[in-house]
Image (cartoon, rainbow, N blue to C red; front, side):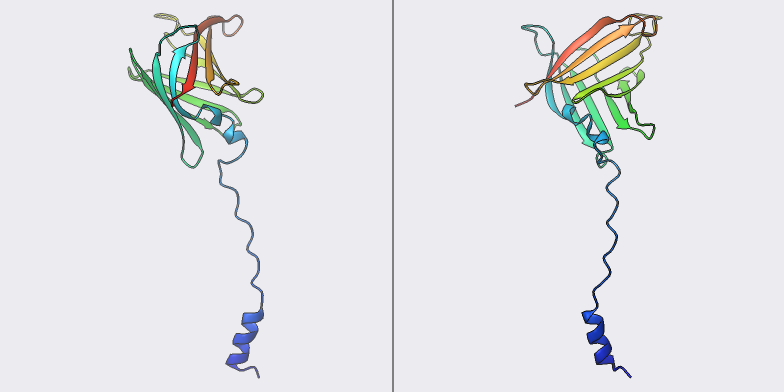
Length: 172
């Protein structure tokens, strides 16, 4: 018969079973990092020589890496912000909310490395009564800045025209 002391010694010598590895956090995949190049604090100017600063923008990764949020703070005009996330459908979704209460939903995803393309219908973006399809292309440039190039289409994407062209430069 094993005594209590012997049982305790045997238990001490036994190797505990290795617990299974915990699953990775839900939003740390490579796909969830596709928009990380846009995260930071930025000064934003139109993409033209000698253009004056138009806005500040703060983009942060939130909710354990599951979302990217922008706070758009123009020097003139209305501000707003967006919340971006990779959804189970495998696409990135952005909800823009302006300080006038307007909302726009964009959908898309990465195209190659360090490029994100999102598009959606933006009511009134081309003037009263318009409902253009807007395509935004975010591109990380070699100098670390990010270009946000906007195009719009009044024929559901058959033809495109320039809408806006911005450069985000990191604040010092």
